[in-house]
Length: 81
Image (cartoon, rainbow, N blue to C red; front, top):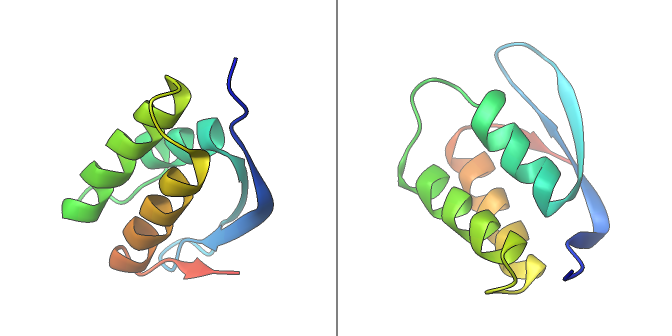
């Protein structure tokens, strides 16, 4: 199985709830996108979901999924640490 860990974890804070989640792997990013994202999401959310799916299937590099996840978090106004 392909490695899906990120070299450095992200901490994302939902500005509406204040909940902070640590995201260390592509699978964790996918879970956050699926379960803990605001109901209204933009185009970057869909792109991030696809990038995570591709990385989990070994079709792309985990760093691509990380970049897409960060773009979706910025679009959703999450605070990133």
